[in-house]
Image (cartoon, rainbow, N blue to C red; front, side, top):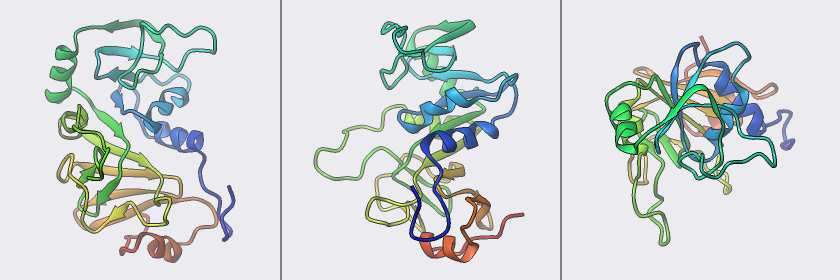
Length: 219
């Protein structure tokens, strides 16, 4: 969808492809519920990425073709998945031991807010009817060697989801390393939030205005 200015947002698949581009060969990766699951469909050809699901799967492949779904083989979001050769499924207690034990290189999670210092809020907005518990996101956010967030930069009301300090209940403190959005890719660094890239046509000044925080220029 074209905005009122000269830039165009990344589609959900474009965003998933952008995240997949940065996952290194041989990485063990957990994809969170929602948008992050799309990353499985965009792993570059020839790159071995071992996908884990918290309900007890290792070696997930892309989503199954329409009509070939097996609803006994699902991810943590109850979506049917495929299993690559050599893949396995096991008790979720063993899966959580893997998550908590630092055996995942990367987890990719959705978020309601990410602070400039890398705090993550992704399980509740505190409003009535919100989900009642954090689930496995807390274990993933702290247990993975790198936590990446994948989300729209702005809420439907136009407010930035990248904030000076989170106002929603926290999932993890200072855990987010990268933020992949429909308008830009950002890094949480000790010096502040740094721009890695932006969509074509978006300027640094305009991005700062949208986020409402000072942003370090791309290296």
